[in-house]
Image 1 (cartoon, rainbow, N blue to C red):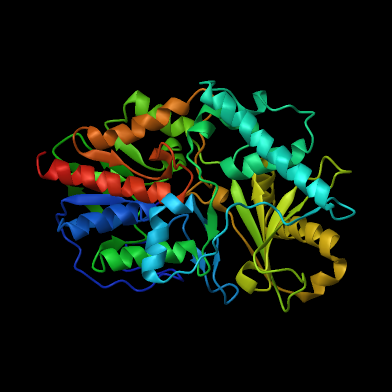
Image 2 (cartoon, rainbow, N blue to C red; image 1 turned 60 degrees about the vertical axis):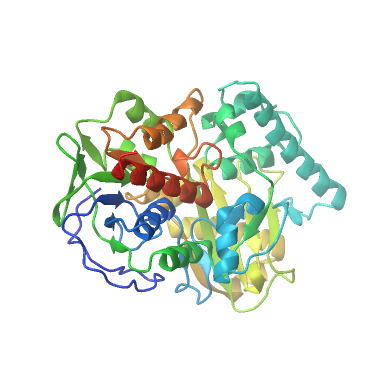
Length: 450
Protein backbone atom coordinates (compact mmCIF):
# COMPACT_ATOMS: atom_id res chain seq x y z
CA UNK A 1 0.00 0.00 0.00
CA UNK A 2 1.36 3.38 -0.96
CA UNK A 3 2.00 5.79 1.88
CA UNK A 4 -0.66 8.41 2.43
CA UNK A 5 -0.42 11.93 3.76
CA UNK A 6 -1.19 11.15 7.42
CA UNK A 7 -3.51 9.12 9.57
CA UNK A 8 -6.86 10.72 10.27
CA UNK A 9 -8.58 9.80 13.51
CA UNK A 10 -12.12 10.00 12.14
CA UNK A 11 -13.70 8.80 8.89
CA UNK A 12 -13.33 11.42 6.18
CA UNK A 13 -15.15 9.87 3.23
CA UNK A 14 -18.73 10.42 2.22
CA UNK A 15 -21.52 8.16 3.43
CA UNK A 16 -19.81 7.20 6.67
CA UNK A 17 -21.58 8.42 9.81
CA UNK A 18 -19.33 10.32 12.21
CA UNK A 19 -17.86 8.08 14.86
CA UNK A 20 -17.82 8.90 18.53
CA UNK A 21 -14.27 9.92 19.31
CA UNK A 22 -12.20 7.93 21.77
CA UNK A 23 -8.55 8.67 22.36
CA UNK A 24 -6.37 6.35 20.34
CA UNK A 25 -4.42 4.18 22.74
CA UNK A 26 -0.64 4.29 22.50
CA UNK A 27 -0.49 0.62 23.49
CA UNK A 28 -3.55 -1.29 22.33
CA UNK A 29 -3.80 -4.95 23.08
CA UNK A 30 -4.98 -5.77 19.56
CA UNK A 31 -4.65 -3.96 16.25
CA UNK A 32 -7.08 -4.90 13.48
CA UNK A 33 -5.75 -4.15 10.01
CA UNK A 34 -8.59 -3.32 7.64
CA UNK A 35 -12.00 -1.79 8.37
CA UNK A 36 -14.15 -3.80 6.01
CA UNK A 37 -16.93 -6.13 7.12
CA UNK A 38 -14.48 -8.51 8.79
CA UNK A 39 -12.33 -5.87 10.46
CA UNK A 40 -15.29 -3.92 11.81
CA UNK A 41 -16.86 -7.11 13.17
CA UNK A 42 -13.62 -8.13 14.86
CA UNK A 43 -13.00 -4.69 16.31
CA UNK A 44 -16.54 -4.31 17.59
CA UNK A 45 -16.54 -7.75 19.20
CA UNK A 46 -13.25 -7.09 20.97
CA UNK A 47 -14.38 -3.67 22.13
CA UNK A 48 -17.60 -5.17 23.49
CA UNK A 49 -15.41 -7.49 25.56
CA UNK A 50 -13.47 -4.59 27.03
CA UNK A 51 -10.33 -5.10 24.95
CA UNK A 52 -8.23 -2.06 24.09
CA UNK A 53 -8.39 -2.43 20.31
CA UNK A 54 -7.44 -0.18 17.42
CA UNK A 55 -8.67 -0.62 13.85
CA UNK A 56 -6.49 0.88 11.13
CA UNK A 57 -7.70 1.37 7.57
CA UNK A 58 -5.66 2.32 4.51
CA UNK A 59 -8.51 4.06 2.70
CA UNK A 60 -10.15 7.36 3.54
CA UNK A 61 -13.36 5.58 4.47
CA UNK A 62 -14.37 2.45 6.31
CA UNK A 63 -16.39 -0.45 4.92
CA UNK A 64 -14.07 -1.79 2.25
CA UNK A 65 -16.10 -3.57 -0.41
CA UNK A 66 -19.26 -2.86 1.60
CA UNK A 67 -19.88 0.65 0.32
CA UNK A 68 -23.28 2.30 0.09
CA UNK A 69 -23.14 5.49 -1.99
CA UNK A 70 -25.86 8.04 -1.26
CA UNK A 71 -24.19 11.09 -2.75
CA UNK A 72 -23.89 10.30 -6.45
CA UNK A 73 -27.61 9.90 -7.18
CA UNK A 74 -29.25 11.15 -4.00
CA UNK A 75 -30.54 7.61 -3.37
CA UNK A 76 -28.71 4.69 -1.80
CA UNK A 77 -27.03 2.20 -4.05
CA UNK A 78 -24.34 -0.33 -3.24
CA UNK A 79 -21.09 -0.09 -5.14
CA UNK A 80 -20.09 -3.42 -3.63
CA UNK A 81 -22.06 -6.13 -1.83
CA UNK A 82 -25.83 -5.70 -2.01
CA UNK A 83 -27.62 -9.01 -1.36
CA UNK A 84 -28.16 -10.82 1.91
CA UNK A 85 -27.07 -14.17 0.46
CA UNK A 86 -28.41 -17.34 2.09
CA UNK A 87 -30.68 -14.99 3.98
CA UNK A 88 -32.28 -17.50 6.34
CA UNK A 89 -28.90 -18.39 7.84
CA UNK A 90 -27.21 -15.04 7.31
CA UNK A 91 -26.51 -13.35 10.67
CA UNK A 92 -26.64 -9.94 9.03
CA UNK A 93 -30.31 -10.49 8.22
CA UNK A 94 -31.03 -10.49 11.95
CA UNK A 95 -28.96 -7.34 12.23
CA UNK A 96 -31.03 -5.75 9.45
CA UNK A 97 -34.20 -6.60 11.36
CA UNK A 98 -32.76 -5.23 14.59
CA UNK A 99 -31.60 -1.98 13.01
CA UNK A 100 -34.65 -1.42 10.81
CA UNK A 101 -32.99 -2.00 7.44
CA UNK A 102 -35.65 -3.16 5.01
CA UNK A 103 -34.85 -5.81 2.41
CA UNK A 104 -36.78 -7.58 -0.30
CA UNK A 105 -37.54 -11.20 0.50
CA UNK A 106 -36.74 -13.11 -2.66
CA UNK A 107 -35.70 -16.65 -3.33
CA UNK A 108 -33.47 -16.30 -6.37
CA UNK A 109 -32.22 -13.86 -8.97
CA UNK A 110 -33.90 -15.40 -12.00
CA UNK A 111 -34.31 -12.80 -14.73
CA UNK A 112 -37.90 -11.76 -15.26
CA UNK A 113 -37.02 -10.81 -18.81
CA UNK A 114 -34.20 -11.61 -21.23
CA UNK A 115 -33.41 -9.57 -24.32
CA UNK A 116 -31.84 -11.59 -27.11
CA UNK A 117 -30.38 -8.77 -29.18
CA UNK A 118 -33.36 -8.15 -31.44
CA UNK A 119 -36.36 -9.27 -29.37
CA UNK A 120 -37.46 -10.32 -25.93
CA UNK A 121 -37.32 -14.01 -25.10
CA UNK A 122 -40.68 -15.70 -24.82
CA UNK A 123 -41.77 -17.59 -21.74
CA UNK A 124 -40.53 -20.94 -23.00
CA UNK A 125 -37.13 -19.46 -23.87
CA UNK A 126 -36.83 -17.76 -20.48
CA UNK A 127 -37.50 -21.06 -18.75
CA UNK A 128 -35.02 -22.86 -20.99
CA UNK A 129 -32.37 -20.25 -20.18
CA UNK A 130 -33.02 -20.57 -16.46
CA UNK A 131 -32.80 -24.36 -16.61
CA UNK A 132 -29.59 -24.19 -18.66
CA UNK A 133 -27.99 -21.89 -16.09
CA UNK A 134 -29.09 -24.15 -13.23
CA UNK A 135 -27.75 -27.18 -15.07
CA UNK A 136 -24.41 -25.44 -15.56
CA UNK A 137 -24.22 -24.71 -11.85
CA UNK A 138 -25.09 -28.33 -11.06
CA UNK A 139 -22.46 -29.77 -13.39
CA UNK A 140 -19.70 -27.72 -11.76
CA UNK A 141 -21.03 -28.46 -8.28
CA UNK A 142 -21.13 -32.20 -8.99
CA UNK A 143 -17.51 -32.18 -10.11
CA UNK A 144 -16.55 -30.45 -6.88
CA UNK A 145 -18.60 -32.85 -4.77
CA UNK A 146 -16.66 -35.66 -6.42
CA UNK A 147 -13.45 -34.06 -5.17
CA UNK A 148 -12.29 -32.85 -8.58
CA UNK A 149 -10.24 -29.69 -8.09
CA UNK A 150 -10.37 -28.78 -11.76
CA UNK A 151 -11.36 -25.68 -13.68
CA UNK A 152 -15.10 -25.22 -14.01
CA UNK A 153 -14.60 -24.83 -17.75
CA UNK A 154 -13.27 -28.40 -17.90
CA UNK A 155 -16.67 -29.85 -16.99
CA UNK A 156 -18.91 -27.47 -18.94
CA UNK A 157 -20.13 -28.52 -22.37
CA UNK A 158 -19.12 -25.70 -24.75
CA UNK A 159 -21.96 -26.72 -27.04
CA UNK A 160 -24.61 -26.71 -24.30
CA UNK A 161 -27.71 -24.56 -24.87
CA UNK A 162 -27.26 -20.97 -23.74
CA UNK A 163 -23.64 -21.65 -22.74
CA UNK A 164 -22.76 -17.95 -23.04
CA UNK A 165 -25.28 -17.05 -20.34
CA UNK A 166 -24.18 -20.04 -18.26
CA UNK A 167 -20.60 -18.77 -18.37
CA UNK A 168 -21.76 -15.20 -17.72
CA UNK A 169 -23.57 -16.14 -14.52
CA UNK A 170 -20.81 -18.44 -13.28
CA UNK A 171 -18.41 -15.56 -13.83
CA UNK A 172 -20.63 -13.12 -11.92
CA UNK A 173 -20.99 -15.50 -8.99
CA UNK A 174 -17.26 -16.21 -8.77
CA UNK A 175 -15.87 -12.95 -10.25
CA UNK A 176 -13.64 -15.15 -12.43
CA UNK A 177 -13.87 -16.79 -15.81
CA UNK A 178 -14.66 -20.53 -15.52
CA UNK A 179 -11.10 -21.31 -16.61
CA UNK A 180 -9.86 -19.77 -13.34
CA UNK A 181 -12.52 -21.18 -11.03
CA UNK A 182 -11.93 -24.33 -8.98
CA UNK A 183 -14.92 -26.66 -9.13
CA UNK A 184 -14.00 -28.02 -5.68
CA UNK A 185 -13.96 -24.54 -4.19
CA UNK A 186 -17.25 -23.72 -5.94
CA UNK A 187 -18.91 -26.77 -4.41
CA UNK A 188 -17.71 -25.80 -0.92
CA UNK A 189 -19.86 -22.68 -0.95
CA UNK A 190 -23.04 -23.12 1.10
CA UNK A 191 -26.02 -21.53 -0.63
CA UNK A 192 -29.66 -21.63 0.40
CA UNK A 193 -30.68 -19.82 -2.79
CA UNK A 194 -32.12 -16.85 -0.89
CA UNK A 195 -30.78 -13.49 -2.04
CA UNK A 196 -32.40 -10.46 -0.44
CA UNK A 197 -31.35 -6.97 -1.62
CA UNK A 198 -31.07 -4.32 1.09
CA UNK A 199 -33.06 -1.18 0.32
CA UNK A 200 -30.90 1.42 2.06
CA UNK A 201 -27.70 -0.44 1.32
CA UNK A 202 -25.77 -3.41 2.62
CA UNK A 203 -22.73 -1.21 3.18
CA UNK A 204 -24.82 1.14 5.32
CA UNK A 205 -26.09 -1.85 7.31
CA UNK A 206 -22.56 -2.98 8.12
CA UNK A 207 -21.60 0.52 9.22
CA UNK A 208 -24.69 0.81 11.40
CA UNK A 209 -24.10 -2.58 13.00
CA UNK A 210 -20.54 -1.70 14.02
CA UNK A 211 -21.76 1.61 15.44
CA UNK A 212 -24.47 -0.15 17.44
CA UNK A 213 -22.20 -2.87 18.81
CA UNK A 214 -19.25 -0.64 19.69
CA UNK A 215 -20.00 3.09 19.35
CA UNK A 216 -16.61 4.03 20.79
CA UNK A 217 -14.54 1.71 18.59
CA UNK A 218 -11.31 3.48 17.67
CA UNK A 219 -10.87 3.47 13.89
CA UNK A 220 -8.04 5.30 12.16
CA UNK A 221 -8.47 5.90 8.42
CA UNK A 222 -5.93 7.01 5.81
CA UNK A 223 -3.46 4.79 7.64
CA UNK A 224 -2.00 2.03 5.45
CA UNK A 225 0.13 -0.59 7.11
CA UNK A 226 3.24 -1.25 5.05
CA UNK A 227 4.76 -4.03 7.15
CA UNK A 228 3.99 -6.15 10.17
CA UNK A 229 7.08 -7.12 12.15
CA UNK A 230 6.50 -10.20 14.29
CA UNK A 231 10.14 -10.96 15.00
CA UNK A 232 10.07 -9.82 18.61
CA UNK A 233 7.43 -9.70 21.29
CA UNK A 234 3.97 -8.86 20.02
CA UNK A 235 3.64 -7.11 16.68
CA UNK A 236 4.98 -3.85 15.31
CA UNK A 237 3.12 -2.22 12.42
CA UNK A 238 4.81 0.33 10.17
CA UNK A 239 2.40 3.14 9.23
CA UNK A 240 2.59 6.82 8.23
CA UNK A 241 1.94 7.76 11.84
CA UNK A 242 4.89 5.75 13.02
CA UNK A 243 5.24 2.27 14.39
CA UNK A 244 2.16 0.94 16.17
CA UNK A 245 2.62 -1.90 18.64
CA UNK A 246 0.25 -4.45 20.14
CA UNK A 247 0.18 -7.92 21.57
CA UNK A 248 -1.87 -9.32 18.69
CA UNK A 249 -2.89 -8.37 15.16
CA UNK A 250 -5.94 -9.43 13.19
CA UNK A 251 -5.24 -8.93 9.50
CA UNK A 252 -8.43 -8.40 7.52
CA UNK A 253 -7.29 -7.11 4.14
CA UNK A 254 -8.05 -8.47 0.66
CA UNK A 255 -5.87 -11.38 -0.46
CA UNK A 256 -4.59 -9.42 -3.45
CA UNK A 257 -3.07 -6.73 -1.21
CA UNK A 258 -0.82 -9.30 0.47
CA UNK A 259 -0.13 -11.30 -2.70
CA UNK A 260 1.08 -8.14 -4.47
CA UNK A 261 3.27 -7.05 -1.58
CA UNK A 262 1.14 -4.10 -0.52
CA UNK A 263 1.38 -5.44 3.02
CA UNK A 264 4.53 -7.37 3.93
CA UNK A 265 5.66 -9.33 6.95
CA UNK A 266 8.99 -9.64 8.77
CA UNK A 267 9.87 -12.44 8.96
CA UNK A 268 8.18 -13.40 5.68
CA UNK A 269 4.99 -15.39 5.84
CA UNK A 270 5.48 -19.14 5.89
CA UNK A 271 5.39 -20.57 2.37
CA UNK A 272 2.01 -22.25 2.86
CA UNK A 273 0.35 -18.99 3.90
CA UNK A 274 2.01 -17.02 1.12
CA UNK A 275 0.75 -19.60 -1.36
CA UNK A 276 -2.77 -19.27 0.02
CA UNK A 277 -2.85 -15.53 -0.63
CA UNK A 278 -1.46 -16.01 -4.13
CA UNK A 279 -3.91 -18.74 -5.13
CA UNK A 280 -7.04 -17.09 -3.69
CA UNK A 281 -7.00 -14.01 -5.91
CA UNK A 282 -9.81 -11.51 -6.09
CA UNK A 283 -11.69 -11.76 -9.35
CA UNK A 284 -13.45 -8.94 -11.16
CA UNK A 285 -17.07 -7.90 -10.61
CA UNK A 286 -18.05 -4.33 -11.40
CA UNK A 287 -21.15 -2.18 -11.81
CA UNK A 288 -22.27 0.56 -14.16
CA UNK A 289 -25.27 2.47 -12.85
CA UNK A 290 -27.61 4.88 -14.62
CA UNK A 291 -30.05 7.33 -13.08
CA UNK A 292 -32.99 8.49 -15.18
CA UNK A 293 -35.28 11.49 -14.77
CA UNK A 294 -38.31 9.20 -14.82
CA UNK A 295 -39.25 5.55 -15.00
CA UNK A 296 -38.30 4.69 -18.57
CA UNK A 297 -38.71 0.95 -18.15
CA UNK A 298 -42.31 0.46 -17.02
CA UNK A 299 -41.48 -2.59 -14.94
CA UNK A 300 -41.95 -3.55 -11.31
CA UNK A 301 -39.43 -2.42 -8.68
CA UNK A 302 -36.24 -4.50 -8.55
CA UNK A 303 -36.73 -6.32 -11.82
CA UNK A 304 -33.85 -8.47 -13.04
CA UNK A 305 -33.13 -8.30 -16.75
CA UNK A 306 -30.56 -10.28 -18.73
CA UNK A 307 -29.31 -9.12 -22.12
CA UNK A 308 -27.41 -11.17 -24.68
CA UNK A 309 -26.85 -10.60 -28.38
CA UNK A 310 -27.37 -14.12 -29.70
CA UNK A 311 -26.21 -13.10 -33.17
CA UNK A 312 -22.88 -11.68 -31.98
CA UNK A 313 -20.78 -14.07 -29.87
CA UNK A 314 -18.11 -11.40 -29.42
CA UNK A 315 -20.51 -9.15 -27.53
CA UNK A 316 -20.54 -10.16 -23.89
CA UNK A 317 -23.81 -10.41 -21.93
CA UNK A 318 -24.73 -7.92 -19.22
CA UNK A 319 -27.56 -8.12 -16.71
CA UNK A 320 -29.33 -5.31 -14.90
CA UNK A 321 -31.29 -4.60 -11.77
CA UNK A 322 -33.94 -2.22 -13.10
CA UNK A 323 -35.92 0.22 -10.94
CA UNK A 324 -34.27 -0.98 -7.70
CA UNK A 325 -36.77 -0.44 -4.90
CA UNK A 326 -38.67 1.86 -7.25
CA UNK A 327 -35.81 4.27 -7.99
CA UNK A 328 -35.55 5.27 -11.68
CA UNK A 329 -32.23 3.47 -12.12
CA UNK A 330 -30.57 0.58 -13.88
CA UNK A 331 -27.56 -1.07 -12.30
CA UNK A 332 -25.60 -3.23 -14.71
CA UNK A 333 -23.40 -6.06 -13.48
CA UNK A 334 -20.18 -7.02 -15.21
CA UNK A 335 -17.79 -9.82 -14.40
CA UNK A 336 -14.52 -11.44 -15.35
CA UNK A 337 -12.28 -10.42 -18.21
CA UNK A 338 -14.89 -8.19 -19.83
CA UNK A 339 -15.32 -6.21 -16.62
CA UNK A 340 -11.56 -5.82 -16.20
CA UNK A 341 -11.20 -4.67 -19.80
CA UNK A 342 -13.94 -2.09 -19.45
CA UNK A 343 -12.54 -0.72 -16.17
CA UNK A 344 -9.15 -0.35 -17.85
CA UNK A 345 -10.81 1.47 -20.76
CA UNK A 346 -12.48 3.92 -18.38
CA UNK A 347 -15.95 5.08 -17.27
CA UNK A 348 -16.96 6.17 -20.78
CA UNK A 349 -16.38 2.66 -22.10
CA UNK A 350 -18.41 1.17 -19.25
CA UNK A 351 -21.18 3.67 -19.94
CA UNK A 352 -21.25 2.91 -23.65
CA UNK A 353 -21.31 -0.84 -23.10
CA UNK A 354 -24.12 -0.72 -20.57
CA UNK A 355 -26.19 1.92 -22.33
CA UNK A 356 -25.99 0.11 -25.66
CA UNK A 357 -27.58 -2.96 -24.09
CA UNK A 358 -30.30 -0.89 -22.40
CA UNK A 359 -31.09 0.98 -25.63
CA UNK A 360 -31.34 -2.27 -27.57
CA UNK A 361 -33.81 -3.64 -25.05
CA UNK A 362 -35.83 -0.54 -24.15
CA UNK A 363 -35.35 1.79 -27.10
CA UNK A 364 -32.88 4.52 -28.04
CA UNK A 365 -35.18 7.18 -26.60
CA UNK A 366 -34.17 6.30 -23.03
CA UNK A 367 -30.74 7.89 -23.50
CA UNK A 368 -32.14 11.42 -23.36
CA UNK A 369 -33.54 10.67 -19.91
CA UNK A 370 -30.17 9.69 -18.40
CA UNK A 371 -29.29 12.23 -15.71
CA UNK A 372 -26.61 10.37 -13.78
CA UNK A 373 -23.87 7.82 -14.27
CA UNK A 374 -21.63 5.94 -11.87
CA UNK A 375 -19.11 3.17 -12.40
CA UNK A 376 -17.06 1.05 -10.05
CA UNK A 377 -13.41 0.15 -10.38
CA UNK A 378 -12.64 -2.34 -7.63
CA UNK A 379 -10.12 -4.20 -9.76
CA UNK A 380 -8.11 -1.00 -10.26
CA UNK A 381 -8.17 0.05 -6.60
CA UNK A 382 -4.66 -0.61 -5.23
CA UNK A 383 -6.04 -0.91 -1.70
CA UNK A 384 -8.43 -3.71 -2.73
CA UNK A 385 -7.57 -5.15 -6.13
CA UNK A 386 -10.80 -6.85 -7.13
CA UNK A 387 -14.20 -8.08 -6.04
CA UNK A 388 -14.05 -11.31 -4.05
CA UNK A 389 -11.93 -14.40 -3.86
CA UNK A 390 -12.08 -17.61 -5.80
CA UNK A 391 -9.61 -20.45 -5.54
CA UNK A 392 -7.59 -21.20 -8.64
CA UNK A 393 -8.00 -24.76 -9.96
CA UNK A 394 -5.94 -27.10 -7.84
CA UNK A 395 -5.91 -24.84 -4.79
CA UNK A 396 -9.30 -25.19 -3.10
CA UNK A 397 -7.58 -26.59 -0.02
CA UNK A 398 -5.66 -23.41 0.81
CA UNK A 399 -8.58 -21.55 2.44
CA UNK A 400 -8.21 -23.79 5.46
CA UNK A 401 -4.67 -22.52 5.99
CA UNK A 402 -5.99 -19.01 6.66
CA UNK A 403 -8.74 -20.05 9.06
CA UNK A 404 -6.25 -22.32 10.86
CA UNK A 405 -4.65 -19.18 12.28
CA UNK A 406 -7.68 -18.84 14.57
CA UNK A 407 -6.74 -22.03 16.39
CA UNK A 408 -3.00 -21.46 16.02
CA UNK A 409 -2.15 -17.79 15.39
CA UNK A 410 0.96 -17.15 13.35
CA UNK A 411 3.78 -16.77 15.86
CA UNK A 412 1.12 -16.84 18.55
CA UNK A 413 0.13 -13.28 17.59
CA UNK A 414 -1.28 -12.89 14.03
CA UNK A 415 -4.71 -14.03 12.88
CA UNK A 416 -6.41 -13.58 9.52
CA UNK A 417 -10.01 -12.67 8.71
CA UNK A 418 -12.04 -11.71 5.66
CA UNK A 419 -14.30 -13.32 3.10
CA UNK A 420 -11.42 -15.38 1.68
CA UNK A 421 -10.95 -17.02 5.10
CA UNK A 422 -14.50 -18.38 5.14
CA UNK A 423 -14.75 -22.03 4.14
CA UNK A 424 -18.40 -22.01 3.09
CA UNK A 425 -19.42 -18.33 2.74
CA UNK A 426 -16.40 -16.91 0.94
CA UNK A 427 -17.10 -14.03 -1.45
CA UNK A 428 -19.83 -12.68 0.82
CA UNK A 429 -20.19 -9.94 3.41
CA UNK A 430 -21.65 -12.32 5.94
CA UNK A 431 -18.73 -14.70 5.42
CA UNK A 432 -16.34 -11.83 6.12
CA UNK A 433 -18.39 -10.80 9.16
CA UNK A 434 -18.35 -14.32 10.59
CA UNK A 435 -14.59 -14.69 10.18
CA UNK A 436 -14.10 -11.34 11.90
CA UNK A 437 -16.09 -12.57 14.87
CA UNK A 438 -14.22 -15.89 14.89
CA UNK A 439 -10.85 -14.13 14.80
CA UNK A 440 -11.95 -11.87 17.65
CA UNK A 441 -13.00 -14.84 19.77
CA UNK A 442 -9.67 -16.52 19.06
CA UNK A 443 -7.83 -13.34 20.01
CA UNK A 444 -9.78 -13.15 23.25
CA UNK A 445 -8.77 -16.70 24.06
CA UNK A 446 -5.16 -15.84 23.30
CA UNK A 447 -5.26 -12.75 25.50
CA UNK A 448 -6.83 -14.68 28.35
CA UNK A 449 -4.33 -17.51 28.09
CA UNK A 450 -6.79 -20.20 27.11
